[in-house]
Length: 274
Image 1: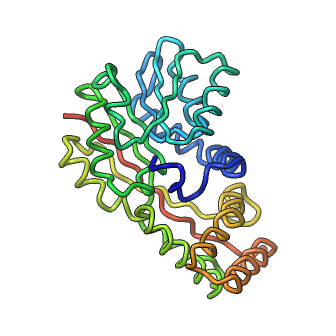
Image 2: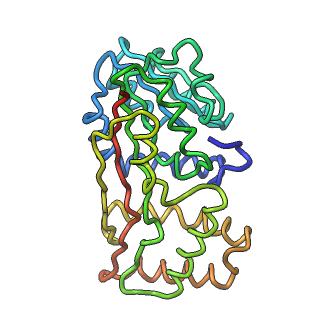
């Protein structure tokens, strides 16, 4: 990731817990793209922007002790959590290294060009140079290796029903603030980036999910707003009054059986190194 100080969502304990819940809520979609990218026993996998290692732990179990998993992340706290998690699980075939994923080929060192699959989930939308990041990942893969990506396009299309202007004002501010640090429409450029970098785009599709107050995925935004909206206020993209109105609208929606939320579209891509 970019420097820890620049990471949009922070790297404190609250964010680490949120990432764990997020992984559970999207575990089905993660496992499905891993299968389509052919992560299997014995695979050598690169987890780009691995965070505390929630996805990495599942991948390490899938590939088994005959495989190899290398995670790379910029946060010292997340690197420590990754190491502790793998030690508890007894996954000695999973390692993490701290560094900027935009230099991941250098971080991989002698292992560059040996990986079967690279997994990149919700990392590129935080990058100011996704072309370079994908170029670096391409170097890490062996010929025929696959990159599996899950990230955003059209994040600002989030809609709450019944419609609420206070809520939508907050979403617009979130999207505007995010552009300081990355690109919430990054997947719109991904077919081009993959092709120009030397990948064949084998798969490109979208996962569109709907949340209602009585289903699990409602918890995804429910744990995100309290941790992120204050950052948007602090950065000056939303007033305190507007933030309070946003949260009041969300609480009201959470208590209504008629509410639903159109979640941000998560696009998926699988590229094969030519």
